[in-house]
Amino acid sequence: MKILWVKADFLHPATKGGHIRTLQMLKALHRRHEIHYVGIEDPEHPEGVSRSSEYCSFCYPIRHHVPAKRSLGFAMQLAAGLVSPLPVPVARYRSSAMRRKVDERLRYGGFDRLVCDFLFPAPNIPDLSRAILFEHNVESMIWRRHAEHAAGLARRKYFDLQARRMFAYEGEACRKAALVVAVSAVDAEVIRREFQVSRVEHVPTGVDVAFFTPPPGQPAAQASDMVFTGSMDWMPNIDGVQWFLTEVLPLIRRRFPEASACIAGRRPAPEILALAKCVPGVSVTGTVPDIRPYLWNAGISVTPLRIGSGTRLKIYESMAAKTPVVSTSIGAEGLPLAPGRDLLIADTAESFAASCVTLLESAEKRRAMAQRAWELVANRFSWESVAQAFEALLDRAPRASP
Image 1 (spheres, rainbow, N blue to C red):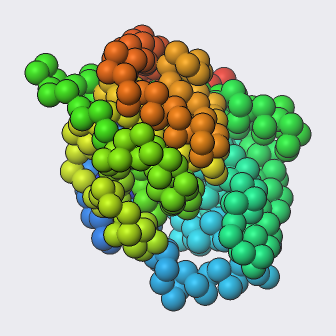
Image 2 (tube, rainbow, N blue to C red; image 1 turned 30 degrees about the vertical axis):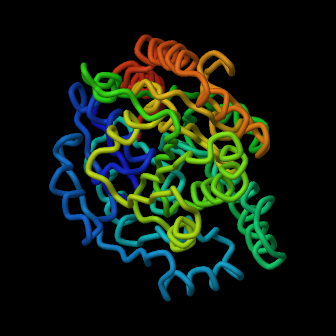
């Protein structure tokens, strides 16, 4: 097949779950299909364009300024979001240049399939009825959860406004698309129910087990060390880490006073850096060249998310690294895992801390859970199998070009 793939950005550095998922799937698809990739280039990361040949045959970089978060330009976008019918996260990536390029490619490229990767580039696709909409998250669900957990009346009202606008836009886009592909059966059912869409399928999440498996002779992790991995400029991660450090960690330290926590992920927000300075035994790495040693050297991996949708690759990565996981229900949402066997699930500060203590107290429990989880991801969730599932959906989808 000849596939036109449209995304709001390029895939390197692959430091986000969405980047990793798309990158691994496209690498597999690229071995069998001709991939043409349209994305917004980032001058700060030229490797995004220069390394695109790893997953596509042709790339079309688009120049479009996306203001950095916490910048004046971003503040202006937030202000515009008070009156614009388009939700702010989508409006940030609306680009007439990208729309022209997609239109041109569709007119003259003879493409078999068109993929809109994430909701954000959807305004740049002239006719969504010819596109497969790949929904890594149900975006309106994320914004609803932001509104539920926002501190202060003004923030709650703003998040609620954006949630309602996202719900309206996302529903319209899903109903227009030729096919919607979710990343879990849970998200697929939400899309069917909330947006009255019948053309919905889902593909699982994968992991590179060989890459994450600890090498022979890897030293045993320190039981008291806990790690959180993920992009630290993403609001759900910021909220989850704040909750963990302020409400969960103090309870853990009643049993393990020396328990430490490492927050490993790119672009840590100022509030996370400030909080880490106030809490002894907490380190914040920022961007790291290789996340694996942080998993291998931790007693447990925590996913304390209270906001989110889609599926968290970090959980499968921890399992592949043989690091036992404690997560909230939202953190593990959509993953076919058995609580108590593959990981521990807890949703209150007290139960989350108790679950961490249970594992920290017993090396045998940690080893047994880690081994069961590793066997699960090794046997069922390779990226090649995920790409094959997506490929089967592409086979059945409508043709992109007339």
